[in-house]
Image (cartoon, rainbow, N blue to C red; front, side, top):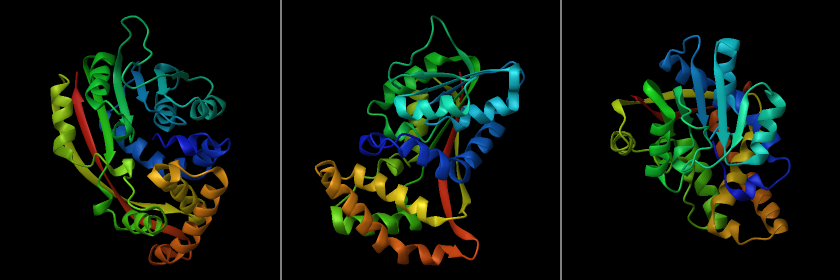
Length: 269
């Protein structure tokens, strides 16, 4: 998952992302996606828009030395965390529309988990995925459903919009499964299929999740982009405070729990 430049430029954000979001939010989907793709010993796996690298790391856990894993992301800060956590994986900095691949390098498995919706040129990114995938290789692309279908995130966005005006939340901007399938067919993939999957997410502590989500919303808003650092910090604190009532219906004695839905599209090379 790639997040706005405002959040990326904060020195501590990638560490916060790794500490508070990766295991409860992104690992379950990474495990599910790799199960869908049925990894085999010897597979070469590419994780596009890898962030701190959870898909690549789960693939490494499953394949060990019997596979070769590469993770690519545009953020050097996210990759610094990825390298610290898993130094034996090949981490590369690069753009989705011009992947940093070696000459004729291809992979048996290509995954893009919650990154495609952020790419400015989606057809170019899909073409690069096709270029990276070996003949008969397996592709998986996941994109969150619209937050209109995810009440918890919709409510948090509406609180933020009281301070910031309308927010185009890119995380949920490519939730149309038909559009995702069409993109992959047009890029030359075969056997394109998609399904919608909903899962219950659980956080032991909702406070860090709420703060990181608020930081992301402020960073994606037009008003937030125009603010100085102190104003951004102030508005983050105000939104976090006002969002507390929205958390209560999803909180119990053991933490925060909510439903989250994604599209998962698979295809062959």
